[in-house]
Length: 120
Image 1: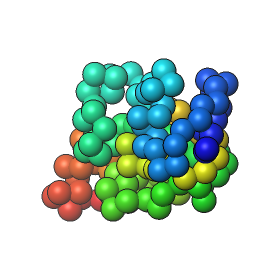
Image 2: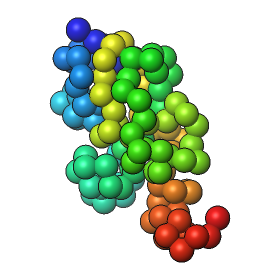
Image 3: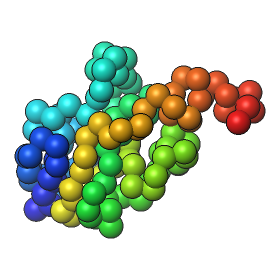
């Protein structure tokens, strides 16, 4: 059984192999959202880019980044993941709501609009 260690919260939870990271966090009472994103999010369907988590250890135990993640997180470090698009296959340590995770670049409304009209 994989375990997810949420560093900031000091909490470790077990989950089934292949569990969705966002759902596992919410089931454990851990909020992946920050500020206004608590009410302004897509509910886990991978359309808002606001449930970002930073992988501290165990990146190899997560599913590969999806195409959606590649778009939303293109200007973020490789160890940042959208929890709604990530499956847990082994032990992992995470940081929820990492600094500079949301609100800049491609995973914001302004970033998405820039991308659509071709502004860098």
